[in-house]
Each structure stands twice: as C-alpha cells, then as structure tokens.
Length: 414
Image 1 (tube, helix red, strand yellow):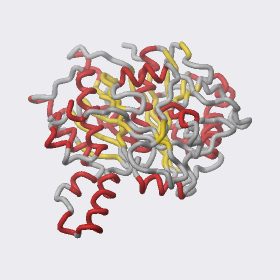
Image 2 (cartoon, rainbow, N blue to C red):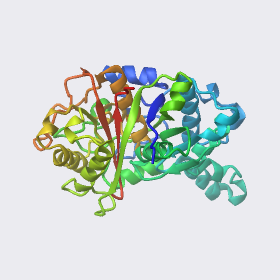
Image 3 (cartoon, rainbow, N blue to C red):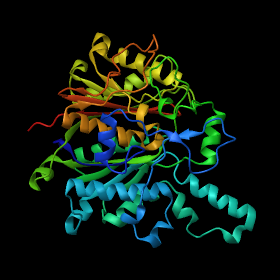
C-alpha cells in the first residue's frame, strides 16, 4: 500500500500562559508559570486552592453571543482555537474541501461545569428548570461537532476519551486516517475545562493534586524530589495535519512531519502506572518502530511529566528501558511545570509545543526542578530554554486506566 506522508501545517492553542500560540510559546520559553490561586469559585475549604486557569479569554471574539450561552467553557475554547488554527494554516474549508477535512478531538471529561450547574438547578428548582441545551452542552464529542459547524469540515468527526492521553490519541488516529488516504486533512488535538468544585474535590480525594498553595508558580515541579502532585489546568491545543502533496499544492507552511504513533495499555491499575514503566515504554517503541528509525535518532522528548511521585519515576524508567545509555543524552522537557496538567488537552497542547520546538530549534526548559529526585537522573533541561536543532521529537501522554500514547514528530525534509 502506498502510504501518504503527513505534515503539520497549522497550530493553535489557548493555555494558562496566553490566549493564543504566540503568547503561550513566548512565555513558555521565558520560563513563566501560568499557575495561580483559583478565582472561579470559593475554594477556601479545599486542600488545593491553585490551578492553571485560562485568563482573560473573550469568546465573543470568535463566537456570536447567542451561541456562547449554549456552549460549555470547553466548547468555547475548542471553537476559538480551531478558528485560530485555520487562520495560521491559511486553510479555507469550502466547496469540495469540506468533505476532505475531518476532526478528531481529545477530551477527557467534557462539560463537568455544565453538569454541576444544572444539577444545582435541579435540586433547588426542580426538573422543569433544566435547559434543553443541558445535554448538548456537556457531551464530550460536542466540541468536535461545534468545530465542524463553525468551520464546515464535513469529514470524519469524533472524540477520543482516554483520560490524560486523549489529546495524544486524537493526533495519532488523525495521522492514521490521512496516512491511509481516507482524508486530506484533520483538525486534531485536545480540549478540557474542569476547574470546578466537583473535579477539585475528586482529585483532592485521590490525593493527586499539589497542595503547595502559598507558592502557586512553584507547585508543579516534575522530576523534583519535593513534588507533591499535579496542578489541574485547562485549555486547548490543536494541530492541522495534512497530506503532504495536498499541503504542497496550496503552498502551505510546514512545521514538521508526523512519522510515528504508538499506543499501549499497562493492564495494571485504575490510576497508578505500572512501576517498571513497561506500558509507557511499549507505546514509545511502537511510535519509533512505525517511523522505521533506531531509538538513538530521537533527540528530544516532551515528557508527560505530571509532577506526581509515581508517574515521573515510571516515565524515567520507561525512557531508560527504550533508549538505554542514549537516554542520558536526550534533552527532556516537562511543559506541565509551567502550564499545569490539562488532562484531556495535555497531549494536544504539548504536541503544539513539540512541533514548535522542532520548527524554531528551541527546547523550553523545565522549571521548579531545584532538587532532582535521585531516581530521576536524566537531562530534564532545568537550566532554561535550550537552543538545539532537532530531527526527531517524541511527545508522551499517559492516563488513568493505564492508557499510553506517544507521537513522533520529525523535522520536515523533501
């Protein structure tokens, strides 16, 4: 079979660092943190009082006011990011193009904010006060549906829900569809907005979140000895993947090429990763095998790096398992040290940053890594942004239920 080459021709993001790619990327390179005290609700009774909230977002710049009221926050982020993505890619979806552009979007929890809002109305005012927009606002696939409605993309339209690997899985399956020749282009990545009382309560009950409330900007500290949990965050990160010849025909800017996708399961525990890192390693190896390169060709890893004691240790073990001695030569970064953990959106946003690292030849550093965990002894780029020409960058995402996904990006060459 004659497989198609797949390239990245557009990027879009809304993060706690900024409401577009340009600002988010600049602040990431500067080593700034987007983590702060929660402002959305009173969290005085909660163990955790910090998160990575999106700040100053103005949905009316992208969505008619009447529609905004009918959309959960995560839908607004998705539509706004998709519009910025298509503008960056200079792709106009019209005519015959409509049927050749699809959407695969990663989302872990969907409209939990809407669920809480209408559950409260149900209890206080009765079932007749629940809006007919309740269900269409909250279902996770509605974000992909809304993007299609606003952009007229009529190709395959679906959502991948695999906890914190959702965004990465979506890119992998979008890549596969283009590689097989099913479509010419795909909007893919991840979106999430779950900074709500119930979500915060749930993660606190699991003791998964950092409680470093007095120093929010220092709370997310992947691979550091003193890490005490992840910092919940929100946002959206999207890529436009495109079949190479289609991209060249329209003179598209090409950021990078997608050359490998790997997925696996730990088959071990509902929340904890398998301690040897075997499942994570299997996903990384699958992506490398698909690219048909030896492991030592990989010269950068954007780690899942959640800042939880077990995840960071297991990911380090997995990297050593895959790369052997070469593991110590690979610059590894953890974006979550600055943007927090966006759950289902994490793989989307971090893939955007991985692609930009290749394109701009800059690796963002990992902040807050002040006292390295002795068992996490690799090069986590804790000395600030590093200038480096990259050929292959691997982006990792791992989620509850033991689900693992990895995308391998390559510097584009004819």
